[in-house]
Image (cartoon, rainbow, N blue to C red; front, side, top):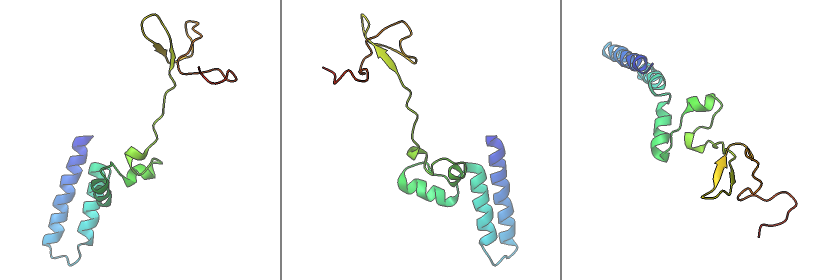
Length: 117
C-alpha cells in the first residue's frame, strides 16, 4: 500500500510538471494536484502539515472527517481498569475483579465503607 501511494505521488508530480511547461497561466491546477497528491501520500493536506509543524502534533483533516480528533495527541485514551490485590511478595493485578477470591483490593474502598485509613 505504501508503494502504491508513492507511485501516485510521483506520477502526480510528473503530470503537474507537464502542465507547467505548456505555459499555463494559473498555478491553481498544480496546487490542487499537489494538494491531492499530498493527501494520498500522507493522509494530510498541506495546511495540516503546517499546523502539525507549528504545534508539534500529528494533525490531519482526514482524521477529522473520520470522526476522530483533528490532532492525534488530543484524542482521549481508553483507560483499562486494573484490579490489584495484596499477595505475599508484591501486588498482583488482573483484568477482572477477584479471579482467585481475594477481597483486599489495593487502592479501592467499598462504597459506604468510609475513607481509607
